[in-house]
Image 1 (cartoon, rainbow, N blue to C red):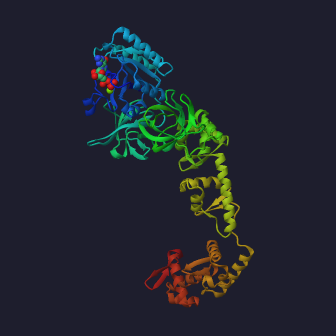
Image 2: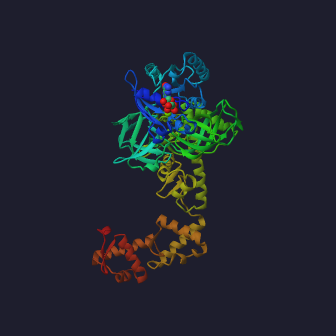
Image 3: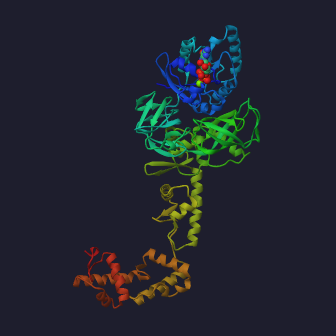
Length: 639
Ligand SMILES: Nc1nc2c(ncn2[C@@H]2O[C@H](COP(=O)(O)OP(=O)(O)O)[C@@H](O)[C@H]2O)c(=O)[nH]1
Ligand SMILES: [Mg+2]
C-alpha cells in the first residue's frame, strides 16, 4: 500500500492550522509559544484517515516569513500539498513564497483551499478565485482543484476530504525500493528508551533491528523500535511519518537535517554539483560565488554558488553550478533543494542534485566539466556509471558506487557485469565483495605501477621488490591495505607482477648482483669458508669496508634473503655451509652423548666461547637443542 504525506502551505494566519484541526480534530500547534502568540512556529504533525480508508501523514507548516526554514524542513517530504489562501485576504507574500518552494521541490499534486469563506460574500469570493487562478498559472498547481471552506462553519470540509482522497489516488508513491532515507525533523529523548528521531521516510523501508547510519555525521546505529502514527510497528514504509528509537546515540549527536540512512548509501559532502534555477521573481541576477542559504531535506546551511558557465544567472534561467557549502550535507542524486538570498532572506531559486559528492572543485568554463554534468544528469545508467568511475578513480564497492553515481544497487550489479564484458570497467574480486574501477583507470594505474617498479628495481637491484606498504601510501593512499592487496592480486594473476608478503616486483625481475658484486660475493664466501667456525665480522670481510654503508647494507640483506648467509647472533653471520656443518657436528655429538655444553661445543668446533655461546643459543631457537640448566639436550627439531 502506498503511503502519503499531505502538507500545508500558505501565508501566516490564513487558517492552515485551523483547517487541519477541522479535518482531524487535532491542534498541531503544540509549543507553548505557539499557543500564546496564536501562530505556528515549528512543524506540526498528525494524521488523517481519508474517505476510502487510507491514512495519510499530515505536516502543518508555519506561514510566517521568519519561520520559512521550518516550513522548508517539512516541505521536502510532501507528496501532496494543501495550498491555503484566506478568502478575505487573497494571495499574500508567503502564499507566493510557499508556492515557489512547492514549485522548486516539484510537489506536483495539490488542492487549493480558500479558507474563511464565512467572512466574505459571493461576489468577493468570485474575485478572489479569479485572482488565485491567475496566480497559479504556469505553476505545478495550475490544474489543481480548488475548494472553498470554512473551519468555523465546517462548510466545504467534506468536499475537501473527498477531493483529497481523489487526488491522493493519482499521487505517485515514494520509492519503496533501495536504501532507507529518513531526513530527521525532530530529535528528543524518551525516558527508558533514549534517543528518538522523527521524520518522513522518503525512500525505502526501515525495520526494527536494522543497522543504519546517521549522516552527514557518519554515525552507526541500530533501530531498536519504530512507531508510525503513534503505534508500534515492525516495518515502516516509504511515505510514512516515522519515529525511530536509536538508543546507542545521544540526542546532541543528531539534529534536524541529519538523515537516517542505509549503510553506505550516502556519501556526505560539503560540495554538490547541481542544476540550478533562479526564479523569475528573483529581485536580481545571481552572481558567481554569491552566498546563499541552502535547504535540502530537513536541513539547512550556508554556502556559495559557483556558476560553471557564466558570471551571472538571470532570473528565470537555469545553469550548472557547484555549491560550496559551509557544512557537510547528506544528499542523493535527484534530490531537490531550495536557495534563499543571504540578505534579505527570500526564496530565489532551487534545483536538482546531479552529483551528491563531487571529488573536486570544478574549473569554470570547461566544456568537459559541463558535458560531464550533462551526462550525469541525463545519460543512460551505463554512461553515468562509467563517467562516475572515471571521475572517481578508486576501487569502489558496489554500494559506494551506487551511492555516488545515483544508481540502485540492484541495477548496478547487472550493469557492472555488462560493462565488464565490454571491457569498459574492471571487476576486482575481494573477500565476499566486488570492487569496481574504470578499465581506463585500471590500465593507467597498471602502467604507472610498472614504471615505479622498473625504476625501483634499477635503483635497488639486490632487493626483492618495492615494499608494499610504501608503494600503497605513496601512490594509492586512498586504498586501504586490504583493497590494495585485491588490486595487486589481479595484477599478479594477469602476470604483470609478483608479490611476496612484504614486497612487489615486476614478474620478470629477479634480484641479481652485477659482475663486480658477484666477484665480491665469491671472495666473501671464500673467506668465510677459510675462517670456519670463527667467521670475521661482516665489516671485516674482504672488500666490504670499501662498499660504503648503503651498499654494504644492501649486499648483506641480499645474502641473508637468499640464505647464503645466516644471522646467528648480533653482528655474527655464518655462511650456510659452515652453519650446516656445525649443525651436523652438534647432532652427531648429541646422538652419542645425549647432551652438550657451551664448553663442549667450543672444543668440538675448535673455536672460542665468543662463537660457541651464540651458536648454541641459535640452535636453541631453532629447536635443534633445548637448554636445561647448563646443559643442552636434543631439541624438538631433532626428534
Ligand atoms: N472566521 C474564520 N476564521 C478562521 C477560519 N480559519 C481560521 N480562522 C482564524 O484565523 C486565525 C489564524 O488561523 P490559523 O489556523 O492559526 O492560521 P495559520 O497561521 O495559517 O495556521 C485564527 O484566529 C483562526 O481562528 C475560518 O474558516 N473562518
Ligand atoms: Mg498555523
